[in-house]
Structures are given as C-alpha cells and as structure tokens.
Length: 343
Image (cartoon, rainbow, N blue to C red; front, side):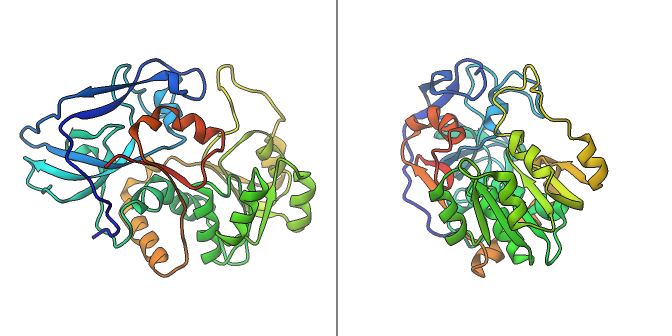
C-alpha cells in the first residue's frame, strides 16, 4: 500500500488540459487550452478515477507532435496524453474497487472513465504515492530496465550518463552504483553537478556547458567508458562515442538536445566509431518491456526502502501550470522529476 497519500477532494467538475494545436518542436503553453466538463460516469467494465498527481515527461513532446513516432499523436481537442496516479472512486469493473490506487494513461485532467487497458501498474508497493511517478513510473523503470537489459553493467565498469540530474539519469547513476559501477554524470549547471555528487552519489560529475567535455571524459575515464547511457544525442553523444572502450554498450534513451527532426539534422559520421570500437548501440522504449515492468517496480521499491536509491520531485500545485510544463522541462528548469499535484 502506498504511503504519504496527500489529501484529495472529489470535485464537482472535471478540469482538462486539451491539445489545441500541433506544436512546432517542443510544445509551448500556447499549444494547449484549459477546459471544464462534467464529471463522467463509468459504464459496464469501466471505472471512474480521480487523478491526484500528473506526470510531465519528455516523451510528451513526441505524443503531441504530428511527426512520425512510436505512438499515434494525441487527437487535437482531446486531453493531453499523460501518465498519472490516481484513485478509483466509482467502478463497474470487478477487478478495480473504490480506493485502489492506479498508475496509467489517465491524461491531464481531474477525472477519467478508464478501462483496464489504460492501467500500467497497480500501486501497491510501500513507497510514497508521488514516488510512483518518480521511482516506479516510466522514469524509474526506464532507468532500471534500460541499464540492466541493454547496458548490462558489470562490477568495475565505468558508466557515463547524460542528463545525470534528471528523472531518469539520476536513477541510472544510483542503480549503476548499486551494481558496482564507477559513475560519471554529465549535467548542465554547477548546481546540478553538486546534486549529482551529493544527492545521487555520482563518483564524478561534469558541467558539459562550461568544461572541455572531451578532455574531461578522457581525464576521468582514461581506460574508456564501458556503458554510455544517453538521453541527449547531438554533440554530447558525438564527443562521448570517441571516449568509449572497445566493446562498450550505448543505451540510447532520448534525444533531448535535438530541436527538430524535420529535416533530419546532420553531424559527424559515427559509423567508424561503432566499427573500430565494436560498440553495441541499442535504442530503448519502455513500452517494449511491459512484461518486465512489475519485476522492475518491485526491485526499485526494494532499493528505495534499503536506502540505495532516492529521487527528487519538482512539484507544482495547480493544473493551470500544465500547459507550460513540457517547455520548462526541455529548458532544464526542473529540479527533479516534474509532477503536478491536482488533488
């Protein structure tokens, strides 16, 4: 059972954040509209869920876009697709009872009539309720599964992580440390460098905006990097590839540094690095690994309760902040996993 459950009310109306137009690049506040509707009623096989926390995720950029992606775009005029955690308040489904806490595809809104297909995880682990977005949501399970399944770290490996203070990167470093890796984090400010070291236990943290990145990686990883967990792409990736050890594994988890993929950006040719270093370079999408989700959730809760991993939250308290939240995320304005409390 989750703990630290905040107070929540059962509103008499349903506030929604609708996608008003297709964004050009990163979604801006002007791409959304706030609306109010009646609280819906569940039908047979459905349940009514009251959202408590909304998640803000980099992947929402792709979900809102008309560009080719791994999922269909959010319909214009519909609630913004989002992962949330909430509580069942009315049900006509035998497996979901009032009082159940669920994590899933419930959107940026107060209420949703949902079916079992929208549920990703039943929130039963003994962690704070907000932790289901930071630790056991797609950020935490991505960190755990991408690192262990694709990065395959071994004790003594050097692990390099971009966006190391972010919701995924901060956990990758801690999980890697628990597996016996030496950890190096890349981040974009001196404050975040300090958080990487003091809060998330990185052995080394580098401000890539102010340092000579190539020289710094060479200095702190003289024998090369064995696992590179990349959330940015772009010039950071180009630099890091040339400092990887023979047989290194690259986990491509995001491309946050790329402003637009239309037209495709050009840059250094990396084929030679892949060939000569015998690299294994893999892309990770959490939705390919749903069969392992519950196992990852249990392991993350175990690590948290054992004091081996922690997380930080950046919490807003008003649904009206949601339209500008994705842009703020891409601008690096968040300190920790960005969530919005609407209870």
